[in-house]
Image (cartoon, rainbow, N blue to C red):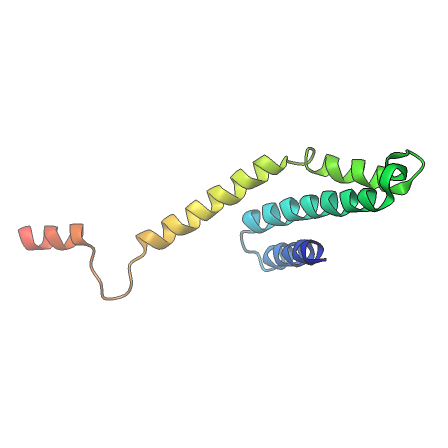
Length: 116
């Protein structure tokens, strides 16, 4: 239930960012990653509950598992989604690291002022 709700909330967040005209690449990648993993986990649990009958092709659980598993492969693999999220996080933190608080000077700039 927690994974499913996390996927739902991340999807809504990505949609809200898009509607607001903000960059939503990271949020969309996180939503796709979490949703595909949640679907695979939940389908796997359904098969576990059904035991051997879960693998029979006449059972919906078998199809759900195949469909869920393929979402981790098609439409951007899970590994690609990890990379997209990581790159966007690095961009965000790099931008924060280069932004100085109001009234502060970085050491390089201060050294140039002293030398002049």
